Structures are given as C-alpha cells and as structure tokens.
Figure 1 (cartoon, rainbow, N blue to C red):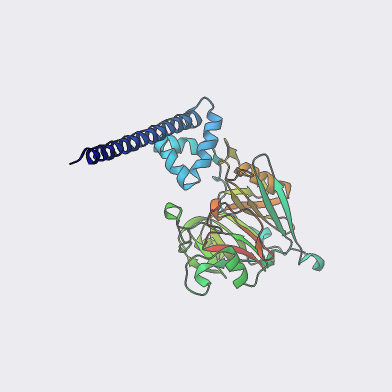
Figure 2 (cartoon, helix red, strand yellow):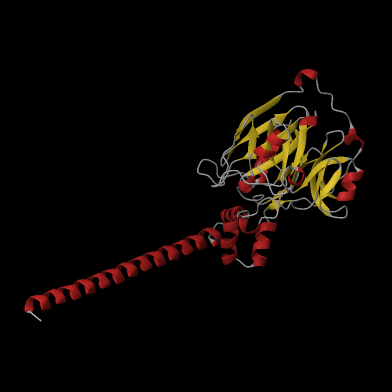
Length: 343
C-alpha cells in the first residue's frame, strides 16, 4: 500500500472518529438540556402546586383537574386522598339541589308577540375570561338535539350539525359523554338523556343531576331519577352539573369554586327568557372562568335557575351560520352526543 493511500485511510478513520465524538457530544448535550429542563419543570411544578400559597396552588390544581393532561400531572404530585381533599374544599355545594317541582313550574310565560323572535348576543368578560351570552326571549324555541335521533347512526355530531339538521338558528353543546383519554367521539352520553318525553339514554331508575325543560318550557335542574323527570313533565333533558343557581339563589361555593376553564352554562329568567353562556378558556386571551364567575354572570342577568353543562374543549356557541366563540380544541369543534338548539 502506498504512503498516499495510507494517509488517505488514516484521514478517513480520523474523520469518522471526529463524527462519532461530535455525535456523542451532541447527544450528551441534548440529554443534559432535557434533564435540566425536566428538573426545572418539576421544581416549578412543586413550587406552583405545593408552594407557599395554598390559595394559588388550589386554583391551579382545580383548573388542571378539569383537563386530561392536567389531571395526569396532578396525579404525579398528589395522592388520591390529597386530590379529593383539595377538590372538596374548592367546589359548588349541591347538597340542597334535589329537584323540587311545584305548581309554579307549570305556569305559562306571558311573552309579547313582538318579542318572541328576539335573540340577543352580548359579550361578557372578567379578569380572566371572555365569552358570549345568548338571550332567547321565547323558551319554546329551545330544543334538544340527540345523536341517536340524527341520521347516519349514533356517533357524536358537531353543534353545527345539530343546528342545521333540526333547522335551527343557534346552539350550544349539551351534556357530558364518555371521553376516554380525551378522545371520545361523542357517541355515549353521560347519565340520562330525555327527548320528546322519552328516555333515550339511561334508565328510569338512574339518579342523576338533570338539566332540562318541562311541558311549560320551564328550566328544571337538580338531582332526580329518570322516572321523576317523566312524572314532572320534563320533555328534554341532559345529565351534567353542578347546579349554579337554584330557586333564585346562588349555590354556595367553597374555595375557588372549580378553577379556571372554558364553560358552558344554561339558565332561565323569571320571564321565561333562556340564558346560554359560553366562556372561552385555556387561551392567552381568556384563561377561563370559575363557577363563581359564571354564577355572577347569571345573577347579573336575572337568572332564577342555572346549571353547568359540559365544558372544556366541548364548549361552543353557534349562531347565524358560524361559531361565534373561540373553541379551545386544536382540532376544531368536538363531536358531542347532545346539543341545545334554538329554532
């Protein structure tokens, strides 16, 4: 082998050695950076979640608990007993919201003919949130869309699909649904669903927090069985909660009342007008609202009854052919099993 070939071979070996060293050094630097970042992130979480301010920590935990990824993080930092203790100290008290339907819940609303087609949409905002409030003057215009009654099977549908299929003008998402790992397709509703005075999901003996309208178009909310609901003339209802305003009074709140998140709320005034509230959340322009924030908005708008519907990435308000709130889901509007529709 000539000297030139030997020198060329040695250069190749040295080049390969340099490449291997550079690669190992790069991998080590990346690994060190990742470990350092993870360590700082863990320390930051410790400070935030278990830091010197219990009030701030509880707010963060309550907020994160209502998200799939946040819930997983919280579980790495706290035991189940600790989580339960935090949540119980920061919640809405629904111990007194067992449904109690009286003769007043069957009274007829006297709505002037000139106001029956009136729908108002107003912006709402607070220190941590922005949202939309829709006021439907005639409650008889509010109907429930249910996935099993839609064409093409019983998978979930978007609120827009429900509005268009039912010939409506507006709508918001309704009750909860089975959502494993945050990837549910809206096919299986939570609890009981009633449509046209028939239980289409759940059973008469199930005891749930129901939110729905009776034959006189009064919004009825509270804990009841499916059988109770039918006996009381409830024609359309979904399962969720908590109840926020009951018999004209705000439900008691402990601590932060549930953290800051996107919210969907439905309520009603004494004159029959239906209030539909959607709060944006998990965004730089709107972190979200607590239950206390939503109660304040409902009471400011004279609600005598109000309840929380499914929120988070499901929160959406559709009106006049478009979504008018800022949906938090990166994939756009989620598929849901039920939606409240305004015709």
